[in-house]
Amino acid sequence: MSNEQPDGNFQPLQQQLASYIRTYGDSPAPDDVAPERLEIYRDLFANNIRNLLATTFPVTSKVLTSPRWRLLTRDFLREHPCETPYFAKISEEFLAYLRGRAGKPVAHQDPPWLYELAHYEWLELAVDLAEDDNGERWPLDHGSDGLDEWLCDGCVRPTLSARAGVYHYPVHMIAPDNATPAEVLTTLLVFRDDSDKARFLHTSPFTLALFERLQANALREPEQQRVANVVLDELLESFGLSQQAAAVAGGHEVLRGWCRLGILRKDRKD
Image (cartoon, rainbow, N blue to C red; front, side, top):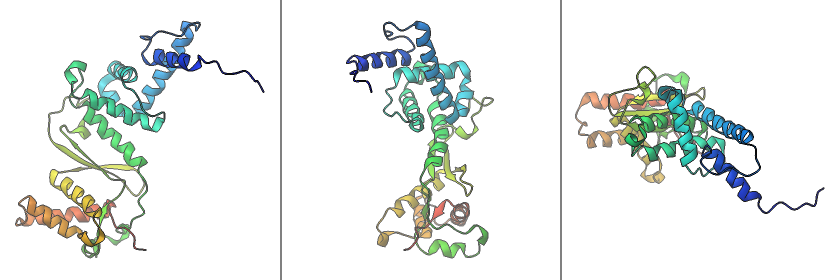
């Protein structure tokens, strides 16, 4: 075993190399390192991160086209101070970077929907990585028989893997052949189905509010929790819809549909 002590200048040299690679050569290069070797490190680093991000944000990368995607990821590497070394978290860092750019899209010549589209795609990863939910769900083979009674028997809550997204653009419709969508309020739910695949459900501001109220209701003390039908009735009242039969029936059908999809669960009793 060697007794040689590490060079005290190692860390500054390492930081200089990292800075050179991240800034695409704008920072000074380390001395005594061949330029062609530095280019190899730089290209490997940039391509690995770019390809990793393209896996999480496939639509974003394709809609922007290759040159703009390369420029965007280069700016991310140069400008954003990442706070995690984990690959699984790089997409969150990229999203944080885009959120910062969203306030000045003209300066960067970004499409106005860029951050929202990336967030929409990131939700799929967030749902995939979310913890498993062992809560009781409505049995798949029961159809709708007894479903209303099940809803009224105890507190139901959204599954732990479900996420909601609210956007100014129809992000679920943006594609290379639809890159200039009109601005329209868009609300979506993302959840894992029974095959553990992420699914997106187009909702409305009302159903999104119902989802959020059910989440909040589940966080209350047990004696303060309300059954789903009461939560729905309170929401209908706040929207001024409690006397509209179609709205009431529609709200109850939303609850049933969420149960059949496994979006609503109950905590199991010990």
